[in-house]
Length: 147
Image 1 (cartoon, rainbow, N blue to C red):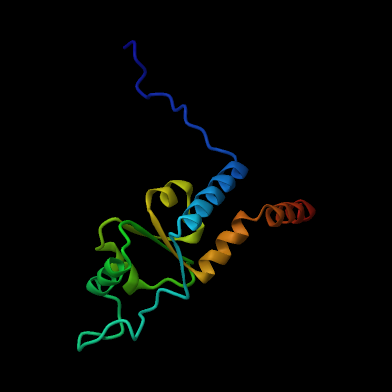
Image 2 (cartoon, one colour; image 1 turned 90 degrees about the vertical axis):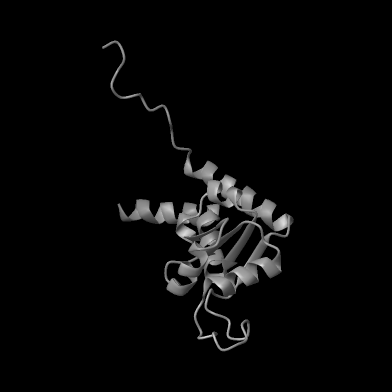
């Protein structure tokens, strides 16, 4: 046949330096807009919910109420892999226009797609380390020394 079976792929990956600049630009823009919130963790806040159904676990209704009270329309929750909270993830999965991902998986597209960013302190530290060019250069020098 005159047409190839597989369409050629013309996509390409951006250099890491350019991706870091994009991440910094998005985080800076969200910060200037006042749409970045830093949390200690995503553990269930004992004082947030009153009543007999507060069993110390996240439920969708609790998280939905918190998001609605804060006025967040679309929100990205970012945490580290070490501080993973299963109950929070289950509650978040039921919310429309929200996403949960680990800081190592953060990318420009996801950060641009959600208006509000809620980041734990540990995840913020990981993102800072990842986006710090001097730190990245020092790591590359150490790698070269080991080789």
